[in-house]
Amino acid sequence: MLDRTIHANVKQLVKRRCASYSNGRCLLYDTSCDYESRFGHAVSCDYFEKSVLPNDEVLEARYKKAHGINYQDDLEEAKNIRKCTDCSEAFMRKSNRQTRCTECQRNANRKAKAERMRKYRDKASNM
Image 1 (cartoon, helix red, strand yellow):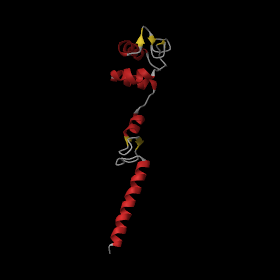
Image 2 (cartoon, rainbow, N blue to C red):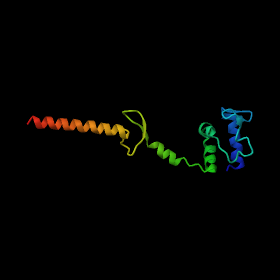
Image 3 (tube, rainbow, N blue to C red):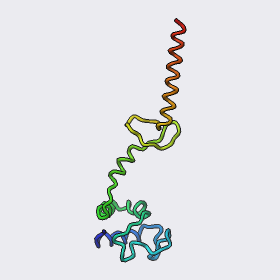
Image 4 (spheres, rainbow, N blue to C red):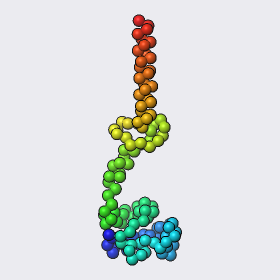
């Protein structure tokens, strides 16, 4: 629940910076703006939170605290998301040295093992 000062600051930010705001209406959802309504203290708008609110860091921190939003867990999780070097798909890494997704790593291990065995057989046959 937002207090009056945070709500007033949010309304000002919406009026100044929100691209989908026009004369008290949300152009994205074709409804009245949630922050203009009298119920604006308890509602939230995803577009506003992701696109407009980061423009004011102090207000963003107060807003998130008032709404009970904790993005620390999301930030920790985002640190572990990487792109696979082989297939370029995003994956959740399990260690800081991991560069491939599990499927590509399985294929790379299979190829490396085949190459080791080929070298071993060549060495054994040349003796």
